[in-house]
Each structure stands twice: as structure tokens, then as C-alpha cells.
Image (tube, rainbow, N blue to C red; front, side, top):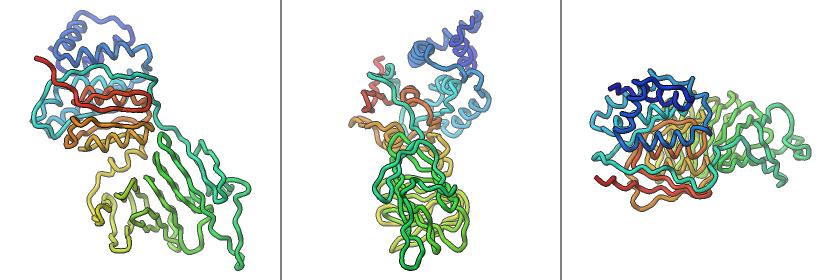
Length: 386
């Protein structure tokens, strides 16, 4: 029997397009469906949803590259037979154009589980949109649905004008960019610095910077490409630490008390009242539990959100749930039986509906996802009765 899951994926793709199968293809498909209960559940669900799915992905399948990725994972995790048990599922996912690979790690033994269809009790949840609001210095709120370029010379709003002091120099007027959950935004500041702001974040910035320095205030997460200006260092202030740069590319994640600064290009200094560290490209400065440490970091993981990708690398379900919560603006609950120590690795584009993410997660993990309105419940699947 042909065991290449991408051949099976190609056969199922033909079924989507209502193309006839020859006798050998039909035999391979029937055998694949019989091999494991998960295969039949996945096939039935894909066929049921086929009428609602776009077929552009059929021409975008890169079998060789995606299969090579599966083989690489198998060589690294020889004892993780779960990889091969879901290889056909991975092939189908790749053929859907979602660029997803998902493997469950840190498990002591393999366990067959029931895989019921994803429970979507109500309408699906759309991915985040480009959009935010500006709270002006005068308190007025302005909704913005497109990228904003302060450097173009135009004011955010006509009546948000500078106030001159006795010296005749304009005082700094700060506005606040608020990016709610299920949104993202890009803003170019007055000096030409570009900032990508993640969901559930706030950036406080001046309409024009002063003569001596450039300073902004961040809650949440943002990626900065700072315009070089040797005379005016650029500062990013968070509640816990400050970041000082002259011109560089870096990411700051400051959700809560833990702050992580990851450097892609240039050189930055991360400091607070007690400590100061300098990091180089490929490193991060992480503030946690009152301590500031420098580590080698995974930039693909740290910058994934800015590149419109979910990228998990040995992540726990709590971290994955938090990302889904911010991106889709949903409430997430975990039942007590969900193992918090298990880790998962995966990659999927972020511009897909929530159901597409959850369906694939469910098929390649021991977790069950139940969505009701905007509330997501994550539970552990029950073992299959033998």
C-alpha cells in the first residue's frame, strides 16, 4: 500500500473537486480510511465542509517540502510514534494551504483517543482585523481602520495642535494608540520609526519628538523598526523595564509583569532601576521575578505574530490559549484534567477562522475544543474504548 500521506491528500483533493478516482486511488483511499478512526472522522468532516471551502489551496501544495519537514521531526523524535500516527492528517492540513505542522511532545506514552467533530454551537470567529483607535491628548477618540503615518506631516486631527511654552518651543503632546483584542495595527511615528502593534496593546507616543530624545510607552506587544538618529536615542518604556536604542529592529512583549525584548538587528540596552544589560541580534533580555537575564532566543517564534503567523515551539497550552484569546477576542477556559506540562510545536497562518485552527489542533492532540458564542472550553479527550 502507498503510505505517502501526500498521495492520500492528493486523492482527497480530487474528491473535493469532484474529479473521478481510478480503481487504485479508490482502493488507497478506502484503506486509509480503515486504518485509524481518526482518518474516517477527518475525511467525513472535510467532505461535509467541502462546499464551503475555497479550492485555491489545491494548486499551492508543496508536497516535497512539507513531507521533508515531517521526516525531520521524526528523526528528532524517534520515540514519538504519534508523529507518524497523524502524518496523513498533517498532509491534509498542508494541502489546505494553512501551512500548519503540529506535534505533541513531552508525553510518556501513546494513547488512542476519541476524536469527535469540533463542537461549534454558533457562528465561527473571524481572525483579527487591521484597526485601532487613537485617544488624543484632548481626550477625543478617533477610530482608525488603516495604517497611520505621522511622519507624513499631517496631524491626526485638526484641533490636536502643539502648545507653545515661554521659550517658543512646542511642548510634547502625547496620544495613545489602543489596539483591542482581535485587532492589529501599524503606525509610523514622526521620526519615521515604524511600529507594528499586536492585539490587546497600547502605545503612547508624542505627535512630535523633542530635540534630545525619542520616547514612547508600551503596554502589550509591539515590533519596532527605529529610524537611526545618533543625536536622539529612542526609548521604549514598559511598566517594568526601559529599552534604549539608537537605530535597530526589535520586539517587546510586555503583557503583564514579565517583559521580553528580542533583538533582530542592531544593539539595544534594557534597563531598570537595579540592572542594565546589552543584547545582540538573536538574543533576548527577559525580566521575570525581579531579575533581568540575557538568553539566546528563537526570533522566528518571537516575531511570528508580526509576520502574521502562529508559531509554537515547545509551548504549553496556557501560552497557546492566551494567543488565541488575544487574536480572536474570546474567553478561554481549561478543565482541570488538561495537562499543563505537555508542550506543543506548530505553525499556521493567523488569517484563518478560529474553527480551522481548533479543528486541526484537535486532530493532532489529545485535547477537545468546544466553542460556544465567544467562550472556548479546552478539555482532555477520553481514551477510546478497546
